[in-house]
Length: 248
Image (cartoon, rainbow, N blue to C red; front, side):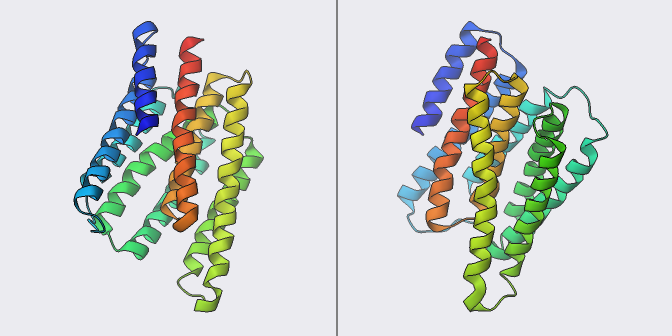
């Protein structure tokens, strides 16, 4: 909440002194939505501790975050090029596979399907933008695609392997998930420190947030808490990328 409030204040100061682009305004919507979601969940957790609500208002706040970030990226898309079609199809399949896993784990069909739909909107706009901006090389796209397939296979294996082997598939999945997360965060920090193009900074920072969400929804325990901290960092990196572009 403190980080969201800090970013929100800085954004209002930024918009009061510089040009108000649609990209940044949609990002403001995302920050406000996330802040409201956090406030609701905090209030609910205080009022009804340890009581599970399968479908709560904070989920709507999260959907608003994904839709706002997707809309923010859509304002920067210049054209939809043919080379992005393969990556877009793989993205849709990957998110759909994640949704199937969420449903298998939680049994919350409506919530998970709607989350998947809004994530597909966000992820496909992100992939198109990153391809258009040449944020990743063709080799890295292939490597990322292979990681996505292996992550899904490792998680699906959990439903079929014996109990004494379940820990192995989880460790393997976590290694893959965290490897990609560390890579994207490192690339984002380097782009923010260096003199990279605004599209590169924004593409990588949004990608760090997107992958954080994937890892978060596949994690539990200590890993989950680590990813929550990384998610806060991703919000701050997205803000910094917009701030650097607007000030420039």
